[in-house]
Amino acid sequence: METAAGITGILALGALAAPAPGQAEQAASRIPRADPARIRKVLDGMESQIGRYWSTPRRDAEYLSLMVKATRATRVLEVGTSQGYSAVWMGLGLEETGGRLTTIEIDAGRHALARRNVREAGLAGRITLVRGDAHRELAGLRGPFDFVFLDADKDGQMDYFRQLYPSRLAPGGIIAVHNAVSEAGDLRQYMETIRRHPEFDTVIVSTTMEDGIALSYRHRKV
Image 1 (cartoon, rainbow, N blue to C red):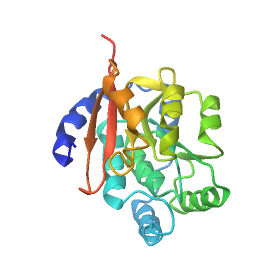
Image 2: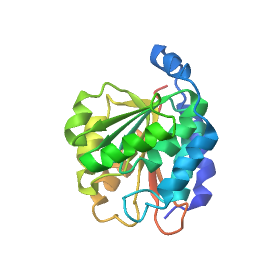
Image 3: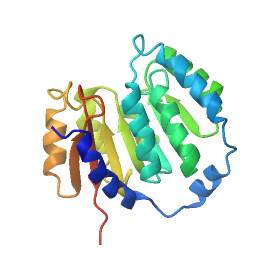
Image 4: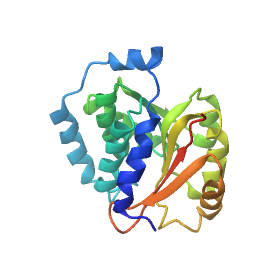
């Protein structure tokens, strides 16, 4: 298993992923900046609920925010919003890059809670929350995305991948899959597929030393 020592290499790859800004990205960059202190206050409040709701550990969420900034991602997708903890962290990163996040949650209660948390953080202009089954909702998303975080049903991973690649994942884009160690059994087919795929480089990075995030970088065509 790769550990945090692999971060430097994947950041070097990720630095190549920054797309030239288009009209949508330029418009997103004009969204008024939220108050960082307000965002942090909301994050601190959500942390007390992590045991109750499915949320990434703080170190993983911080890493996602860092990756958004390091790759200069502007078109970000999340599958599995839960209470919105990782979405707000990525939104914090998008405050720097001027991008936008679309996040999908199947549960109505968690979706409503996430919407409230995003609004209280002042990030409603930067984060679009979609309520529904991502296996169906992905078909309606235009893309392409340059950073994708998948943290929902692990046994549905291959369907997500088929819907993302090739049309909804930009060349130079990254797919990040949570629980790559603890849910390795359900992710086996996906991991075997992505590791063999000629267009992807994949490593597993651990920030907690207890679980891991599988990062897969899609090659740019030269």
